[in-house]
Length: 287
Image 1 (cartoon, rainbow, N blue to C red):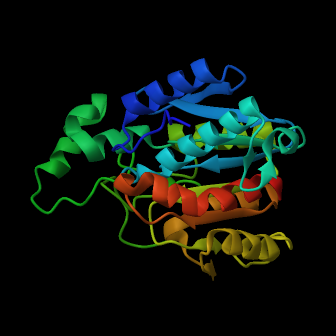
Image 2: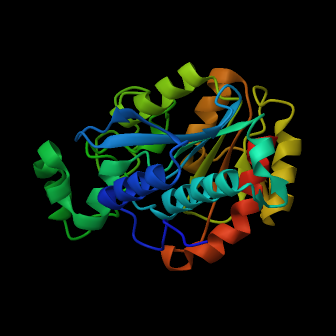
């Protein structure tokens, strides 16, 4: 097949164009705007299959991560192609499988942060002066936060770490949990959709992370092992708020399984990286 999703440094306009092209090719795709960023960019969710029994996938929560968004867009394209042409994916009859289970994908949650990371303070809209103050600093860190200087991944639950008391490129958790437009968009969708499980992709070390606590669903350990075998990724279990904010919130809110998956790689090797994860992404939809 000829892919709509191709290797690129994913930005907001490219994200929109890909989604528009996918709608044209696969009109059965359910595409919604679930909210808008602080600057006003649309946050999209794409669904295919049985939307009453869905798992939710989310990517690009950090401004410096575009690869996870590309992978999720490619995943939804591959699923849609399989449905349209009655093809298998990872040895699964997708048309039959998606009559029972559904997939909802939010490719890019932190769209403002991604624009700032790629193009600088000029893409921060009304927050451009604030963001510029950090870019004028020769030691400015990579921009991971949203346009308001809040690290979205840390905005889901209270963060008790010290030394992160003000907005900036990373590590500030916000004035209170779910204070940010991006966070609210995701949590509102989850509360309305009542998804049975959640998988966050992030552009970090290749691993499957889940938390082993009193609140963790009993099925999580087995699910993590299945995902690990499907993607040949090691399983990490414990406390690591740096890359588990989304899944921590989902578990606490719903007492349902949630995981974080590090993709590794870079966008130049999109197809290679995706191929190594396709089976795990597909299996997760059916667990």
